[in-house]
Length: 529
Image 1 (tube, rainbow, N blue to C red):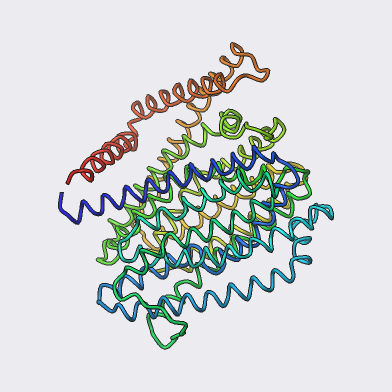
Image 2 (image 1 turned 90 degrees about the vertical axis):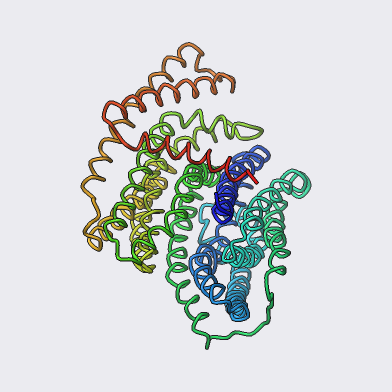
């Protein structure tokens, strides 16, 4: 293995390990918080208060920075224009800080008016608490945005270690705040933990930043530089898309606030559980595919581009539809094993599990969107994914409003799933119209085959749960019995899915084995001197 290949392998391992560990710490953070507070009014207020600062961060920074700043900086570094690259960074940071500070001040002053609009179901005490927590956490989007810039700058130079550690420490600090501060300060300790975690997220990256070649920063805004204008223009569509997506979460928070105490807690936990396989499988795959898709389009290889996209979608569907079936059948066991600790009672477990059932319906669609959106980014088209996301938000909101009264939290989750499938379908059709070589018919046939296999696997798991439930008893079984039940059901379902794949001759089964074997070989090779 060459030195460059070895470095890339190590970087890939760092990023993949960081994604996985970040999800684990995110789960642990929720476990600690939910076990300390339970699904109560204080934790409802905390999650509701988190929504507005998070919306500000998503609107101004978040993913818009990495998708816009990294390509521009990488080009300047390749041309050895280091001083110009730092001027671009300064321009972006200064404009971003002005926007964040202005939004944060306005929201802090208007919080007593804004919060009741977002949480109309809260009483006066809960509303006052939510206002106070929101004002504290308004510091976090400013710090996280600076941390996001630092991450983009480091990644553009091929430096991944510090930026991979930053989100891990963010979670660790919030966990420590929950353990150390919450017993003294109550839920206010969590809000302080979010701010401290955001500060550490930035601070851990600063030493690596100042060691970069020709480091320099000033408070100038140079919009005459075409590179700075390009970065800002690339950020705009992505920022609009992320901002529009926040409408879904704000509307669902508004609806959930009127569905009883603990509803916002259950909604957020169920959504986080659904995101775990996306973060571990879907997002890393999308990150890896983007350069290859860009190269295919750059050389005019539309057939190669289409085949790459479809192979990736087939592989994602093969894995995600199986995980969908498993999560739907084993959702109660999953929530029990992950969150049945401390003050998180049986009512909260049931509410979270029922909400997770409907969230999971959209799991495969969310995974497809990761790849499909990057297929458009590879062609330097950021507008189409944004328009599709706006349509998805409209579907989310309409379905949630229509079903919240009859289905409760499950209706809100159904809205998210429905919007995801509409967005995935629109992106797929538009991509097929743009790249006529995209073998979409084969993808649809494969999807049908995978659904049949997932249904068979799910039915097998359901049968095992029924048999083991009769043997173990259904009245408050121990976690060990729940773990045994879930493990037996999962293994039996996996055996059926593998057997079905071999009988039907689904190539993705062998591809999955090859990918796993290749990952192990790369890990061993990266460790050699």
